Amino acid sequence: MADPTGVPEEAETPLPVEAERLLHAAGAPPRLLAHARLVCGTAARLLDLLERRRPGLGADRGAVLFGAAVHDIGKTVHPAELTAPGHLHERAGEELLTGLGVPAHLARFCRTHGDWDRDGVPLEDLLVALADKVWKGARVEALETRVVRTAAAAHALPAWEVFAELDDVLSELASGAEERIAYQTRHPAAR
Image (cartoon, rainbow, N blue to C red; front, side, top):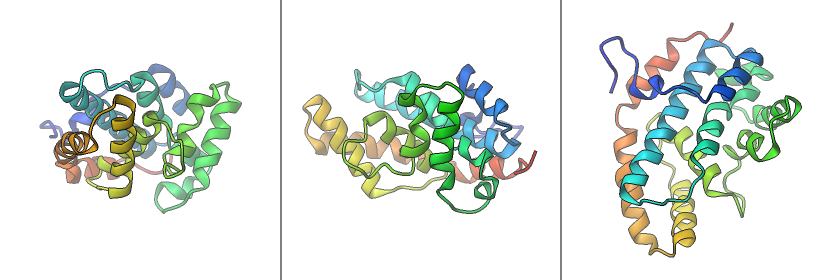
């Protein structure tokens, strides 16, 4: 829910310091910074809500928050993708980050947030992709199923149990999407 100034709760979550530094170094325009805050804040809420329901989820919180913050940094290289669909930013972002000295295991979020349906994608990457969808109210059944299967297998839990918990969490996170979209749109796409 937004506060009286129209800033959604998710946008108030601070970005990881290194992620914010990298976004500024890459010349991220205001809309990309707003998007990074929204997705990172959504990822933080996702992790918090899941942890309350399923302590010991096993996801690397720092990696998820970093990945959520920088997943679209490649849009500084392909700025047309700030306002139109495209996938060129995914590989470009990964290359940009590795060129700036970011370890490959963290730079990969740029690629995997759009390429989550391959075999062997880690839970952290799936959670970043999920946060990137649900912040705007989107529910992607195939992605959610992948998260359920990955988390259930990692913790030897019945998939139905993980599904029920995740479904409740995502329903809560998806509410208020209109406010978040409006907040992001208020920010200019160019510097």
